[in-house]
Amino acid sequence: MPEIWIVDDEANLRWVLGRALETEGYRVEGFAAAEEVLARLAERAPDVLISDIRLPGRDGLTLLEELRRSRPDLPVIVVTAHTDLPNALAAYGGGAFEYLPKPIDLDELAAVLDRALRTRPPAEPPVPRSSRPPAETLLGEAPAMQRLFRILGRLARRESDVLILGETGTGKELVARTLHVHGPRPSGPFVAVNAAAIPEDLLESELFGHERGAFTGAVGQHVGRFEQARGGTLFLDEIGDMPLSLQARLLRVLAEREFYRLGGRSPMAVEARILAATHRDLAALVREGRFREDLYHRLNVVAIRVPPLRERPGDIPVLLRHYLEDAAFRFGHAPKVLVTEALERLVAWPWPGNVRELQNLCRRLTLEVAGLEITVADLPEEMRASTSIRSATTLVESRGVSWEKGLRDWLGSCSEADFTATLRRLEELALEEALRRSGGRREAAARLLGIGRNTLYRRLRRRGRGGSS
Image (cartoon, rainbow, N blue to C red; front, side, top):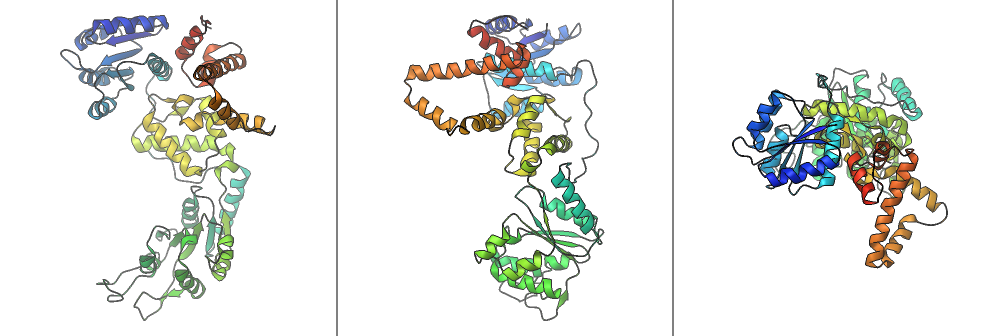
């Protein structure tokens, strides 16, 4: 039976919270001051400690600091009636497992306790932090990625310019860097410029440079990106957003392999490999008159398409593991691990932002999730429902009905009492289905629902289905 210690100078709160946790199956001991806890720790330690911030003598934050030194593996949940930014920063900065406001929500506390008990490493050394960052590389075993790897292998050592196509976030710059590192000029500079990020009136000077006095404000000579990339690679990102006026000049540069600085009279040779990339449909832009057809054909001689993440769901687990390790190194944490149900939700997610969205999620989870395990409850709300909602949509809409529209219409026509009953019934159906799928095993059912075990027990008791598995 897990043992929980409660540190709070309010005897009534210790008694009420202690009784509630004992009902949930915990062994509970209460303390009025930090000194009492430290004295008892000489004999034994709890599985989780819950501490108020405001205590007589040593306050809760001081106690937390001492526990980080003497009991670094003990999860500490900090609670306070005075929630503000300095307290939150101090609590998490001091190593608190979680920070909760008073009055304490028992469902939320039960979920936090459940997570703390599951993620605490039992009498084992902590998971070591990585001493080096994971290599920045293209990852994937899907057929689409294998084709990409073969193309990159064939093109890398050639001097040819390359057009890289792909949706936002697929890793087009990483493809360009791969071509550079494994190309004929790996020791030269890799210079990247985003055509969509630089104002039109500055882009020409940024690319080609200018001489002193070339225009108002040109008080000195400026070396452009084409010169900076000499002996290496110039990566022109978002080429589809380049102004038409500059497209004509770029075409001339690509064809003649020379350019002039603004205000310059001497031609300068292009001594760099040119890689261009875009998430736009260049053929459609040509038809709309927004991209030069001759430049399109010049760029499209050698083109590479980077597949979106939704076309290679089998690679998602590998990418998640890689970017969780990367985030752990970046923020100085031990790498976190996704539980099976959370991984299933993420594999089912369509990833409209592609690998960049996945990378950002891994960083967010590394910073926000207490403990080493990432559960379904830790995922963003839209991702938590990805598997069930997509399946339900496919099932219901195959019959010519929008399940969301039907449910919305029904709820909109409900009386207040019917509305409440409908929501209660939806929860009951979810509980019943989770228990059916898990064969009555309630811990497994809780995992399916993305809630803590104690939260499930509480909801079942409210429906007259107590007991435990």
